[in-house]
Length: 297
Image 1 (tube, one colour):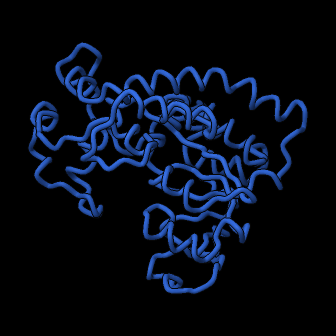
Image 2: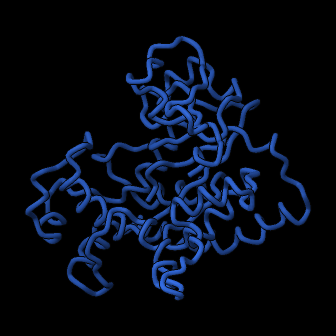
């Protein structure tokens, strides 16, 4: 979305060997897709080796990127930033049960992913959730920088909550439009511009104009447009109280508590973020080097 809007991103695309910049010794901004005016920096900040390479090349100090995408928020914050170059996290959080289910159904079929798990394709949710190595408390592990084999406890939950409170602009997958509205304010993006509107329509965040057909508007298509595009990984849903929901929630007790806390932060941050517009306190120069979490769902 933000690449489409003209923001310069640090993302895995920047170090893709196909574009010839994966061995550069200095920071370079380039357009990977000719004619689209989409700009990336030549580093992959989604993984730890890429973060260390970006640190060595002085990514943050170069002030070349508007957004830095990562799957390693704790590591990226620790390695890339310093007292003179600070950033903030923008993250879309997903309910722990829905996040786990989405991952299960996606990785069982996503042959193009490095983490493709073909053995999951014929499993039931209950079979998968009962595996000894099934993932537990993903968000708390990520936010505290702990390995997934390590135990996390109430102390780690407190650390995760405090990190989110101090450093994150939180968004919710279930409140996508409102979350993107807030991110736009923080980033200084003019979401009323023609380009921004086209990008948000393309990504299903605003309704497309109604289409006349045989003298009638196709309102149903317009109304479902955003919903169809927001979540490309469609999968079965399980309600609270179902065996599937309960077993996954039970395996992620700290994430469930953390998500409740994030929901409360989402409510309390609205007034703060809206004050940026009201008081004209946030200028474009202040919003460089934001970190957008790639997988905090």
